[in-house]
Length: 374
Image (cartoon, rainbow, N blue to C red; front, side, top):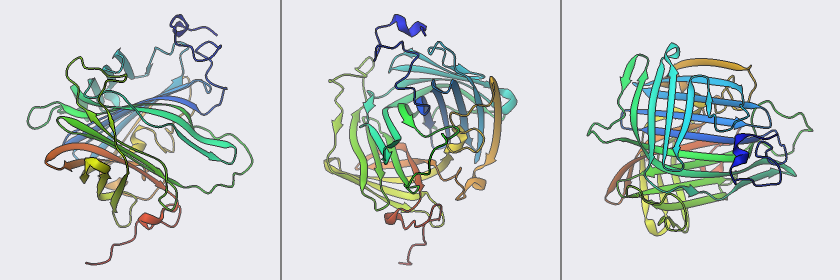
């Protein structure tokens, strides 16, 4: 089946662009954005699942200890350049440099018109793969950029500043990922022997002149399945956003020391040890539950068919989400970051399911044990 993309020289196989990979129903192609300051956090996720015929999106804001979200889901258009579903749209103004997102859902208390401009070049993380026997649980690629934001947000009828208290633009990150990942209504198949276990930590950190990227996926003993760390220079206006001359510097041996909040599966702070780049201290300011943009959401989980077009919303007090339920343990924490003399702001995403010995987790969803008194 031909679509407008077939007029561009972008084909990866002998098939038209509309035919993805080998037809696996768990293929996804996703936009992710976040933005944050000392006072607020927002995020947008939009996913296309061409082998399921679905597109979905969500936008969420945390402000004054309230997390407010709007969700939309429907049939994917044949023209993949139409990255819009219901009240949420993503427009690629200039690839890898400028992106505009818009949300028009006043009935759910959210309206936004925001533009993300690249602060760094795009960084390609190592391909992430995980198999249970012969079954692919994950096989995807992620590209991450640090960005600055301009525009407007209204949440709950209140204007949310998209500048810092000093008048500087809010910073954040843009994440493009695609490949295979478990989603939607599960395929009916024989029970698989692998017990549920996930450890994922992802920390893009914004500083004035250079930015940092750290990612670690680990098994139940804390042994890395994939781990990467890099320094990303802040680019000048018009600087390269891809290619061999971006100045990205991969770091060598790296590891983390997370201080887990007793009774929960999130941090009270962390230290990232980044080889010859030294150590970074992270202090949490606020926590965003990823269910706000569909991750592990019991209703609005990614890749689920609802109808031709369905839009919904929800509002939670942040404190009400401090639980060990499956839909609340996947988080991003806004972090104050100290890197030598540098001071910056970033996020640390955490998802821990099942046992993880370095954190003292033994069961599927138990909380971190209390630390011994000093």
